[in-house]
View 1 (tube, rainbow, N blue to C red):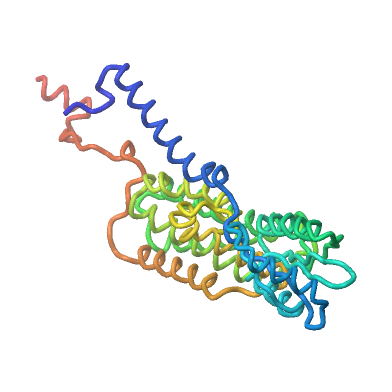
View 2 (view 1 turned 135 degrees about the horizontal axis):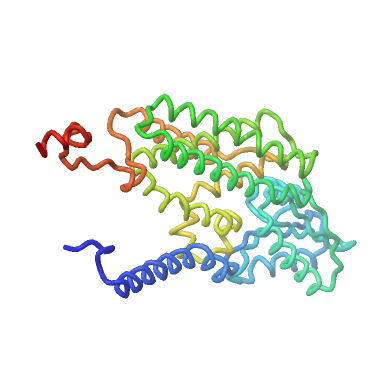
Length: 343
């Protein structure tokens, strides 16, 4: 069967156009498709009423809780209970009702997309009830603080990806020691770059042991998984690792209640980018890590380390880099040898 490059140019043109269209289709589905189909469904919010509140305020809270709107899921609690729910990110915003007026309570530790929806909905409810609502933000986040968690995740992925691909191309037949040295160096430098950006963007962002340690865990896990796939597949692994980077901003930047259920199940449910983004956001804004936000990266790091330490052949950087033995004796290539054969 003839190779593609041996076929007529018109056939090659059609084949390459089809490949380009398929790639555009896949990337459109997993990137812009997430944003284009975003809509609220079951966004968790709380309405807070004190135990000594007038009956009419209690009636407003009960009416909201029983509204049955598919877009919002309401919880009725006391102000202290509601703020505790907000601190644990079980709700994205709180509407506190009091005789003197209403207060919308938000948190800088919540994903900005969830906070934006919460503020719009809670402010609209307060206006609908004929009350002016002030806004209070717990652990307020600056623009840099809102951007930093997702930016750090993307930068650490890119640092490991570029370093791993370059090592695969330049260090042919690289050893496990070489790859692990690269992982360690990439982790240290990647964390240094991200920490430098944090300090540059907003000097108030904490750079304590918890933040730096979590950044190091994420960076090491990314580099180990990338190195493992590059070892097994060579540069062909870039066809998987590259597009994953494009998924990070569209999926990890949204709360699950705004993602279409299909995308929520196929992309958001497993992507490691959301764990690192939400974990880092919690650490930067007075929260604490979830168990899953640690174990996911410990598991990824362990799996990558096992593959890198296994004995076996390395994946070839590229088919064009292979050396083909044409069966010609080295002596036959020498000018002197050719003259002897002629004679």
